[in-house]
Image (tube, rainbow, N blue to C red; front, side, top):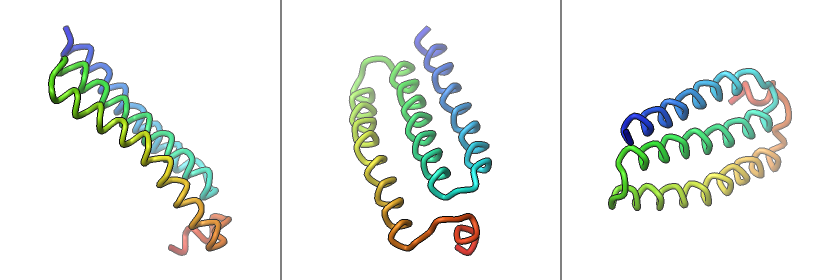
Length: 101
């Protein structure tokens, strides 16, 4: 039963990733794309990892995945803010400047 529920949760995470890819191409502004990417990346990866925990049950693997989830929750906002700060310092504001890279 845990395997079926875990696979469903992992499937939901994969669907979130695909929806996020379409959302990424929908927005034209760099900062909107950055926000969508950071949010979808975090939520989809956490959903997939929670599905892996449910699928495997209580084990050392689950403890390792929980540690990875904690690291992701700390590092993803930090890296996103550093990317946004770098973009602001380099005056990246519109779509034309993004396409030049």
